[in-house]
Length: 398
Image 1: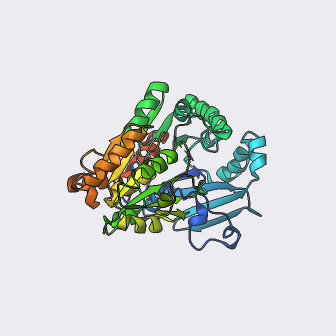
Image 2 (image 1 turned 180 degrees about the vertical axis):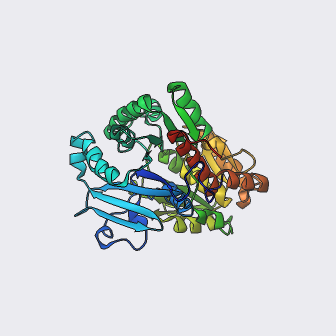
Image 3 (image 1 turned 90 degrees about the vertical axis):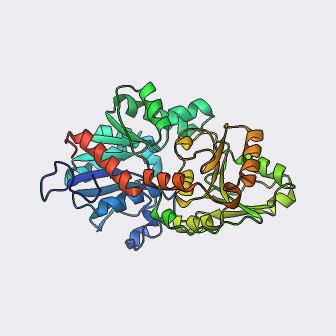
């Protein structure tokens, strides 16, 4: 069923009403009400924005986006393109001190007024799954990461370990969840066999489908995207490229919201590095125009959005074989994979990519390019979430 077609089983003239509990990146939306224009910009969770744009074209779905922000002076509600946004004032320390019961109290007031058919909780980064279940309404949880798996692989920060406890509660008590990648589906089935799971890939912003490629190869233009730290393999990235500095001509663009690390090691290497902070999707897409390849040595990831954006844009990817990455990167077709946490393997993969007849020129196999664009399309994303909504409320799919 298309996201523009009639929602399955929905009565004529009565759209399915869905309340999103979300850290929706409202501060990235244009033309906001005055009270919201000074909000600091967080990570632009583009997958939610992509899905919302699809639903705004579907008259049989109405979304109420409910988000809590620390720096608001008052609650603000407004409507745009059929979507109603509810930005609620909530101090972060009060949310934590109440063990997120404050979230339940504030969101319940909105739900009593809106009367949603179901509640869609986006991620467990702020215990949204448990909050949705406490509301006592039909609910769906979308996993944006898997804390219980992360905790097995690396040492997480204290807050993340706390969120893992909420994740375990929400999954053990939950019914329907969506997740990305075959890897995440298998992991959930093994650990929570009673869950009903729908694989709903988060589609990249449409600007990545419009990238006009003119890759640089002299020198190579490497690009890395994401947070800086052990989890994302930043140490592997810098060590590998310092090792290759005297061998390969390259420049590196690092797109991140993190502060640059201390510049230890080769001055020649750091002279080739450029940091680009808090870039919007259109700015990242412009970097992809000239990028020869994306480097992604992540140690722990379920479905990194940067990899999806790259394959949709036609940028070759050199990445660790971890989580859902093998769902999007096909060795010899659109990239090269190596074992996670393997510095020598990463160095060898970069060398191999630079001498590859396609990747060394910034190109990919055209058949794999078309297949990944179809697999990661916004239309398919919307279809999968409609299927999940149908499952929650017991509608028969069309």
